[in-house]
Image (cartoon, rainbow, N blue to C red; front, side, top):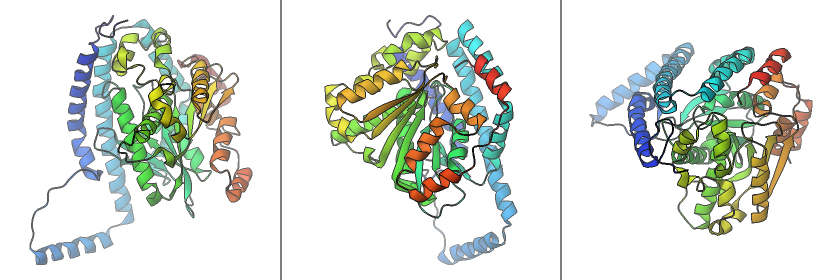
Amino acid sequence: MASSTSPIGFFPAEQTKTTTTTTTTSTQEDMKNTDAVDSPLRSRTTTSTNPATAARRRTAINATSAKTSPNLCRSQSFGREIGHAASETYLITRLAFTLLRYLGVGRRWISRLLALGLYAMLLMPGFLQVLHQYFFSTQIRRSIVYGDQPRNRLDLYLPNNIDSPKPVIVFVTGGAWIIGYKGWGSLLGFQLAERDIIVTCIDYRNFPQGTISDMVEDVSRGISFICNNIANYGGDPNRIYLMGQSAGAHISSCVLLKQAIIESKGGPTSWSVSQIKAYFGLSGGYNLTNLVDHFDQRGLYRSIFLSIMEGDESLQEFSPEILIEDPTAKNAVPLLPHIVLFHGTEDFSIPPDASITYVDALKRAGAKAELILYEGKTHTDLFIQDALRGGKEELFDYIVDYLHAGDTEALANDAMAPPRRRLCPEPLLKLAGLVSPF
């Protein structure tokens, strides 16, 4: 199907890109005031001042700072968070209306949206507890700016005790390339932080604020920030692991492979694939050409999907399974870290074949890769329901054991750690599984 046609009034690929750029530009203006508060990348205008006057000002500022109440500091910090939340709410609302103009009226996506609302309501007892912890926990550093584009922010989840450098997971959340948000990884972040693992959740531009190349650029920039700055937060720069879920698994796998290709050709880089010790892909899709029709049947219409991926001609460029077998990527394969893919056998959003065929392609190319299938698990079981259920769980235990391998003290602490706390009653979890749109 030619990407320039659209059954529901979509723009051609070239025109879509222009529309997205316009949306992004207006969004940058919306976030200008917010980012100016704490962005390390934004320049500030300086004026010349008499040295004596400057010294008096510094003395006055220092004296005032010394008298500042800790409660006042916390109040100001919380006020900034509220302001940022309000700014993001306004931004998301604007983008939602833009997205609705793209979607038009469609029975499939509307039914999925209603199912999503019911699914969220059933899991609300657990979500509210996580939300409260997200805003009030001292373990989290929220909305750290890592770049100069809209939504170039990340959250850091820190263990209570950082007496030595800790392993780090860089997590890229899913959301169908449309509703991804760093906050979706908060449950994973808090639970892994309890096991002495630092988790950083990267936010990135979603459609229609950006298209796939913008998402890949943002995530790569976020990984670069972590690789070069995580030591300042108590992380071990020699133990950094990359993980993505659903659309985030697709985006992060694109980032990893493209970075390896650039390095193999001697191109300039701000971070190295060698800094990533392993890659974990959860419920991801890695060959877009095989998924277009499947997504269309599930409500992510072909026209909007091709707009996200910048046209039919770009599907192969953003399909890691296809790229890995391209002769031009031959020298990049040895640079890749150990790749572990996880998938549920009852995943209907992205069928498990997506991970099976990608692992086969990786092995044929000579990469070190393995696949772990979970019998009877759906698209959200491994990431949401099982996490809210608490107790012991195979995927969680696998990741913790992998990151703590070789650290006898950490492994001993893991063995003595109490089971994860249940956050949602079992009947609600089962009902949520039945109505889940994923």
